[in-house]
Length: 447
Ligand code: GLN
View 1: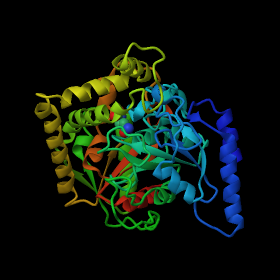
View 2: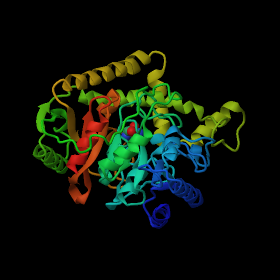
View 3: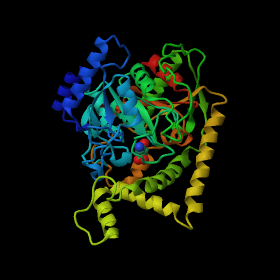
View 4: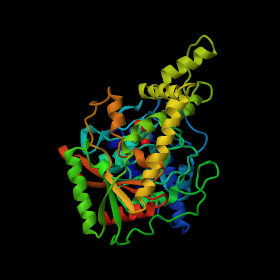
């Protein structure tokens, strides 16, 4: 099985992978065979999985899509990588992503953009674009992703697969290269909700090495897959269906909601009045945390170091100037600014207050509905190169994924047909805290 996927990866031209090491993969596959021969069983034993290149791995390079870590090999495995190996999964390699997961088109990768398998002139979405394209093109049956503000859900939507971002704290961040630590969360990507459930079950669980890991008993996310949807109340926020949503996406989402109604759910009009504040809040908080997290890339401890420099400060300056791409530098500048003396209260503190209000919106909505549904992205995948010089336009496209991220809620994207140019549309589900099994149940019935 691993060999067959490695052949497909070698023949593919999507640029979905940053590092592939066939000998290592095949050695892991043989080990899984040996475990099976000894009588071991398990849903992931011998099943190949591709890891987003944000999770550090021994053996494969761990680049975070950055020149800064172009040749970096980690001395340890991320918790997610370790857990999947224990479950018997076989690592296929490392998937392409936006640099340090900053982006929504996979065009901020030092290793070049990923092509969308449905239409090679389109973006795959981001930042987990390589993961989504790999699963959609059949280069990997399962892939890990990370979602800080939509990076599992949005590329899943644009590539027509299923992606689930669990409640913040479910999946250990140990060994996940940090972007914005209060938002970063590992997630599962696959062609079906059933496969996502199996992958997430193996990925999630308490880890004392991550101080924000939630100490809850392990859960089987597959347990409710077949539960009927009768009587389920699904809220559709009117702020998600109004101005800014493209007609083709709206039509596909409405067809999806009809199908859910046909399965026994009732669709209820609700309001999340603070939705429009999610973008400004996120684009203050995430860069603030990023500017702090990325200070560790100083040319001393990890990865790239400038070849020539006059003194220590010059070494820092040149290393960071050479190692980081434009979007990462933009965010470090914004983050440093909003945290600086005299601006902290005006920006960072205000953004934290907005974050609380956004979570309160959800709390109120979940008093009357069981889950929330809407679009993932305002449009289908756009053309490669179309928006590369317009960062603000890229930020605005995150409007429907950021609220759940800021509130720490679980979110899922499931395929809901096609829009313009035959490009996939995703339908988003957002659940109460720790109710990812419910989201997977709805997505399974929907498929
Ligand atoms: N598109 C968002 C950003 O650029 C989200 C990225 C993510 O979830 N990693 O920050």
